[in-house]
Length: 137
Ligand code: THU
Image 1 (cartoon, rainbow, N blue to C red):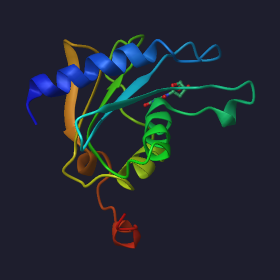
Image 2 (spheres, rainbow, N blue to C red; image 1 turned 30 degrees about the horizontal axis):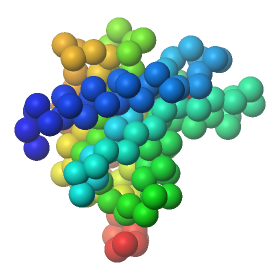
Image 3 (cartoon, rainbow, N blue to C red; image 1 turned 90 degrees about the horizontal axis):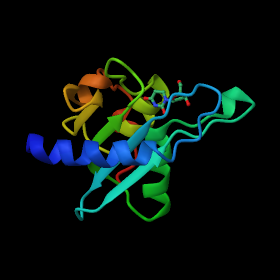
Image 4 (cartoon, rainbow, N blue to C red; image 1 turned 90 degrees about the vertical axis):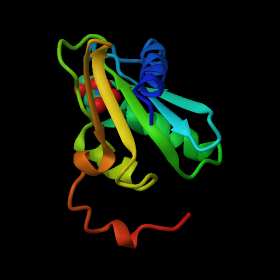
């Protein structure tokens, strides 16, 4: 995957972060998934006054994509525009993301274009020993 393509995806994640509902943390996050057919599905973090019910941007995007009929994705970008350093996905999201894409899937995350991390799902979630129990769909 070209870096320019990842940066395009990152721009979409940034736009998605504008729909974040995060009155408690005041920390908007946007995620953008590139699908196999070239379309992009986005998500934002949605918080709740019962804090434990909050949903991260990454899972919002994955659940939206799955609900629309997609079953896998080709790349992921995450934008945390209020942070002063790149914020990677939480542990729960890493587990969910690896259900739907292979270890080599490119991932980038950052606060802005000039402060980005480029990695893969496999680096974010190594020793994924339960992967072989996953479904083939
Ligand atoms: N959050 C995400 O949406 N994705 C991440 O990768 C890190 C954290 C959200 C959860 C919560 O709404 C807020 O950011 C602060 O943790």
